[in-house]
Length: 125
Image 1: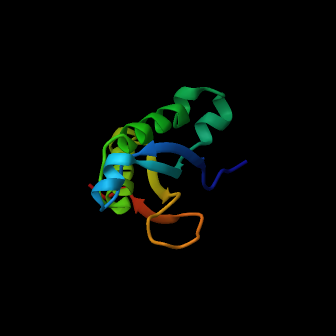
Image 2: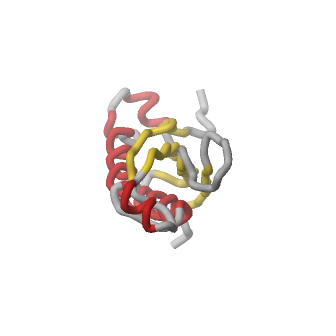
Image 3: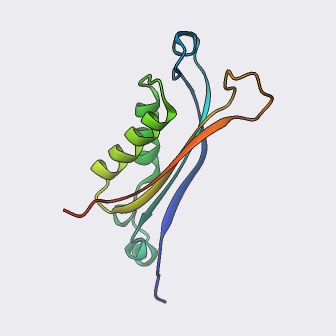
């Protein structure tokens, strides 16, 4: 078997966080969902069945949890921090997609949430 692509996905991680442009949002906080997809060569883990040969999703979750705990005004900034930190701490990750959703955005609309999604590639060195 030849593996052509591998991804690890963490879906709708739920956080209570303090992001927003309005001071009240940063003081009171709200519910957020974060989804993360990372691309990496998973062929070693497929063969070895060893966590050392993959990207540990518990460690990915911990990075997201730590970044969500730091208040920001913009979801774009939060998503960018998460993406950069994943690329910094997991050299085997070649690309990623991060989606941050504010579940109850204060915009006077009946909607499930407002999201920002970024896709990033590891920069060539």
